View: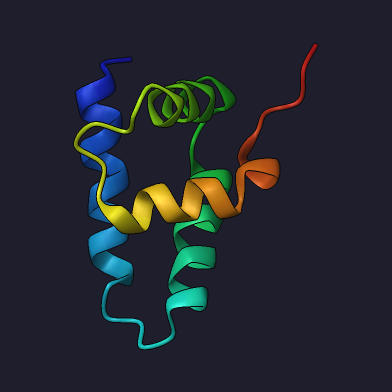
Length: 77
């Protein structure tokens, strides 16, 4: 999948959770949504984009991915 599209989708999720007054809850919400609704391949690609510098990612997306990487990391085969 196109990396720019993944980043845009993740940023849209972060924008939704921006109204959450508690930052920890917002980060958990971002990570939880990605875990629940994104295919393992998409999560793997998003984490690789983070590792490559996270260009274009909203700060909340970067924080959520870093804080909840273990949750988001697809199982290896």
